[in-house]
Length: 567
Image (cartoon, rainbow, N blue to C red; front, top):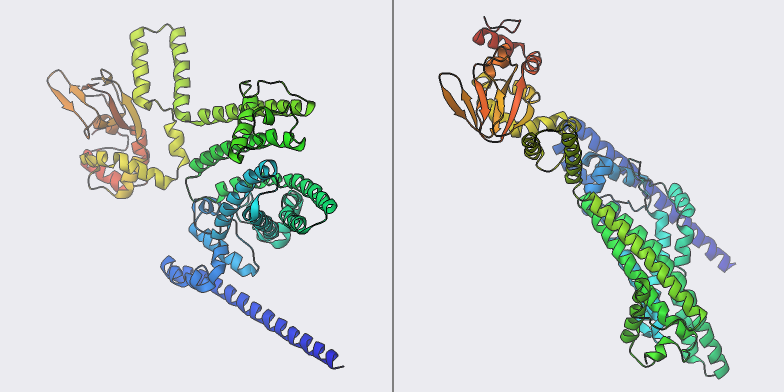
C-alpha cells in the first residue's frame, strides 16, 4: 500500500511538472509572437533603424536565445539568393522561432559546421575501412577500434538528426521546417541507405575482439576467429557511406558563404578527384585482400614480391601500384597473367573501372574547359562565321581587315549583347552604370549644364555606345544628320573649307543636327580608334516630354519651335 501511494505521488508530481512545462512553453511562444509583431510595427512606424534596436528581442542573437541561435539561418550569399533580402531572412528567423520545435535550419551555423565535420569523418571512414580489412589483419589497435565506435555512433546520431533537419527545395522560397514533412521526405529518400551505412559494425567488432582475447578454449577461439573474419567482411557495407559523402558535398555547395559559381566549380573538381582517389584506394586494397582470403597461395603476387612480412605501407604501395597499372591499361605492374579466375575477375573489374575513370575525367575536363570564358568562345565563333561570310561575298582584303579590327575594338575579344545586358538590369542600376560612364560627358555640354538631375538621368538612358576606327568618316559636311556625339576615348578631326580643329576625350560635336535635324556644318574623321556615345533627335525629344519646363527653357534660349526647326 505504501509503495502504491509513493507511485501515485510520483505520478502526480510528474504530471504537475509536465503541466508547468507546457504552460512555460505556451508563454514563450506567446512572447515570441508578440516580439514578432513588435518588429513589424516598429518597422512601419519608425523605419529600419528602430527595427535594428528592437531586433535582439526577437531571439536572433546568442545573448537572447543562447544555443538556439545556432539553429537559425545565417546571412550569407546562398540565403540571400533564396530569400531575396535581409528582411526576408529575418522573417525566416521569426518563423522558425514561432514554430517552437527543435529543427536545424539548412542555412544555420550549426548545419554548416556539422556538414564539414561529417564530411571529414566520412572520408576518413572510406579510407580506413578497406585498409583495416585488407592490411591490418585484426591488429588495428584500440585507437582505430575507438574511432570505429565513434564513427558508428556519429552516423547513428546523424540518422536521428535527419528527422530534425530542415529541407530547402530547389524551387521553394522558404525552407521546410514542419517535422511531419521532413520525416516523410527522409523516409521516402535516404533513410534506408543511411541506416544500412550506419549499421554499428564497430560495436560488434569491439565486442567480438574482447570475447576472442578472453577465450581460452582453442575450439571456441577458432570459431571466434571465423566470426571476426565474417564480421570484418560484413563491415564493407559501411562503404555505402560514400553516398553520404556525395550528399555532403552538394550540401556544402548550397550553404557556402562564397561566390556561388566559384564554389560550384571548386567542389566539382574536389569531389571528382576525391572519388578517383577512393576508387584507386579501394582497388589497391582489393588487390591484397583477395590473396589474403586464399591464405596467400604460392603463385600469388604477394609471395612473388616477397611481401609476406613487409610493412603495411609497402603492401599498400604495391597494391595501389598493381591497381593503377591495370586501370590505365599498362602491364608494367601486372606482367604475370592471372593465376585463377578470381584474379582474372579482379583484373577485368580494374580495367572496366579504369575505363569509367577515364570517361569521367575526360567528360568533366571537357565540360569545365567548355565553361571557361564562354564570352571569348562565342566571340571566336562569331568571327569564324564572319570570315566565311566575307570570303563568300569576296570582300577586298583591306575591307576584311578593317571589319576584323572593328570587332576587336568594339568587343575586345569577348562577345556580348550590350542591349540585352542593359535590359536585364533594373532601371536604377542602368542609371548608375550610365551615370558612371557618361555623366561627365553631358556635364561638358552647355546645353545640359545646370539642368534638373532627373532630366540628365532621362537623357543618359537614351545614349547609345558606338565605336569608330582610325580613318573612319563619322559625319560629312552638308549631309543631313539627326544625332550628336560625345567622345569618351579617342581623337577626331573636325574640318571645313576654312578651318580645322581636333577634338579628344570629353569633347562633343553634332549638337546642331540633334536639335534641328539639319545638315552637318563640318566633316569629322577619326584620327584614332574612338569610343563614343550618341544621342538622336527622336530620343532627345522623347526625353523632353516628361520635362516641360526644360523644353520651354530650351525653346526660349535656342529659339526652338514645336516642329523642331530653327527660327
